[in-house]
Length: 194
Image (cartoon, rainbow, N blue to C red):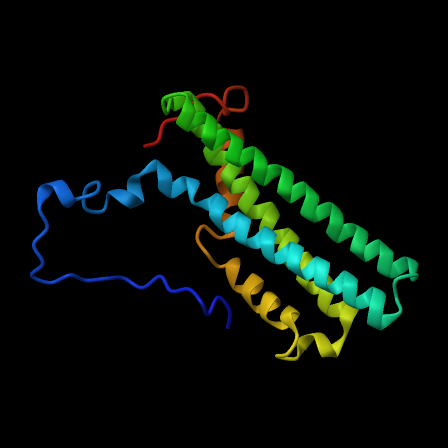
């Protein structure tokens, strides 16, 4: 459906000798590593890029072709998308700053949890902004926007498939809620990776 330029297939190496000095980490270690949690902001950046591309393309199309740029209802919907994109961008940048802080301050445990939680927030908000942007773009531009010759057709397909990348939004929301409800006073500072 979407994301046709990417593949995340497994790779099985049979009878392959790897010397100790060529091994990165330990077998299966990636899935237990901290960097796996930081990868959520990469998903969020993809979502945000799709949202911005759909927003920019559809705004130009509406202003030039649809003659709806002066319609208050059209302006309202584009204002919603603008707000969603900018809010998502701020949360994504915040997550990136928190991960950088974790790296620059010696990977301290107390810096890890805020970065991890911010990554989940960024993934949620960027995915929602992307869905809103592409839905608004399709509805504003009309049927021509669904043609293969239109970039919006691909952007919409890609954005729609982004949201199934783990963890899905429901799991991220569950994690954020559990974090707050299990220790409402100190949830942001007390945490272990285990």
